Each structure stands twice: as structure tokens, then as C-alpha cells.
Image (cartoon, rainbow, N blue to C red; front, side, top):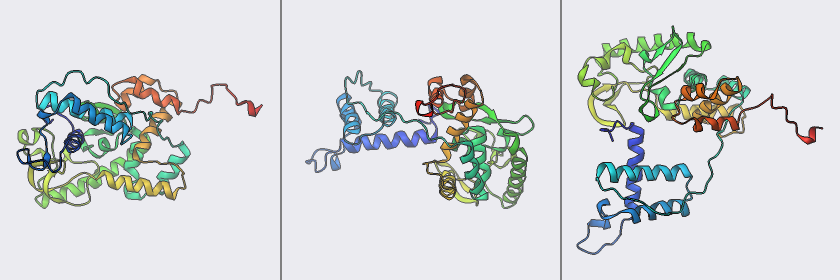
Length: 325
């Protein structure tokens, strides 16, 4: 997966599906002569085994359509790219029936209420999620060089699908982001003085530019609270040893968001990703065309973006409920 430049998140997800697939076909208490514990190598399995597992996900586990498709993609990668054993046509199998749900969206007032009560340490990153339409991991992996405050541009590097894109810096956050950069600069100077190893760099950049992990431009915009002894990136445990500065963890922002939603008294199941959904909906309501929004969000297919047309408020539609006379 690293050869094909898959993201660490995709690597982790595909690996989990492959393990579950093998566990599903494990034969406990297998007789002597078979592999210990009844494990079967995926070469011994084929299209029928894949169909059986996908059917189990749909019928027994009742997973969503997207979840079943994710499992299918992981297994196709295993057979086509790793084992080089094309499985051919899978034929018919039970399809997941749970329909795709409309995204949860907060109103502008609800967003304001949530951001007003969130812990101060997490307010700016959550504001930027809403103000720029970023995914959570895209936000956390922003580096100093990716945020151009003069041109009001954020460059998202290696986003979903391995694509780069550009989105906006909200005018109202420019000064707060300047203060954040100065705070990070002071922390970075202290880290350098302490002899830290730096930050993780993608692919072979750390080998090509060995000084870059300690350079200012490559530092995280939202770094973690402390130096960590060990590897450069928790998701890539083979990329070096030393004292590293990770970015903030997604769990911290998720907990802060959940606490703020409860404190604001909003009866919705809102997460940090809900702020991205809210950004998209509110941008459409303000009159932005769907193609521009597609580029801002980084969607490969405009059909994905069009789902927000189903949750936006349409004040000019001219349709009234018959109950209203």
C-alpha cells in the first residue's frame, strides 16, 4: 500500500478488513496437518470465500452500503495487488440494504453556540474546520508552509485520494492564525534548543532533505502538547527514532466537540466532521455553485457534493405547507 502511496488511514483500514476476512474463514480446532489454529492462507480462498464474507456483512452484521464496499475494496486490493490472483467475477451476493443517510448539519446559530463554549485550546482548529471545510485529518496535518495568510489560501497536501487542493482562509481567523503561528514558532525554537528530532515527513523527503524535519516551514500548525520519544509518526512505526513533535490527536478534538455540543444544549449527534458538512451546506445556501464547492471539498465526483442540496435551506423556493394557509 505504501508503494501505491495509500494514506496511513487507508492502510490501517484495509489491513483491518483483511484480518477480519481471514478470521471469518478460520477453522478452529483444525486437525493435524492444517495450519496451526485453522488459519487459511488467502491463496486457498477465492471468489466464493469473498462472496460468503460480503454476504455475512450484509445479512448478519447489517452494515451500511459504504462499509460493505470498503471491505470489498480491501479484499480486491489484497488479491489483485498483493497476491496477483485475480478473482474474476464475484457473481451475486447479498448487498447491504441500509440506505445512505443525509449528513447531520448544524445551523449557523448552532455553530456559533458550539464554538462559543468549546475549550479555548480547541476553538481555533474547530473554527478552521467550519470556516474552510477541511476534513479532520487534513486539518491536523497542516504545516506552517501550507497556510498562506497573505493570499488567504490553505493548501491541502495529499488529501483523500492522494490529491492536493486549495481552500480558503476565513478573513475572521487571519489574526488568530497569526498568533497561532507565533506560538508554534516559540515552541519550535524551544524544541530545537532541546535537540529534538523534528516532525514526520512524507515518503522519502526526510532522506532527501535530512534537515527538513527540524525546519520551521515543515512544523505542524496544530502540534501536540509535548515531545514524544519513539517514532516520527504513530501510523508509520518504521520511520525513525528520537524525540518527535506529533500533531494533535483527532481524539482530543472529538472529545472537545462532543463536550461543547452537550454544553450548548444542541440535540444533534454532531462531531468535528459535522462542521465540514455545515460548511458545505451554508456555502451552497449563500449561492456558491456546486462545482466550486466540489473543488473546495476535494470530492472526485460531483454526485458526492450534491447530497448537500438535500439538506440546505431554500428560502426562495416558494413552496408553502398547506397547513400554513
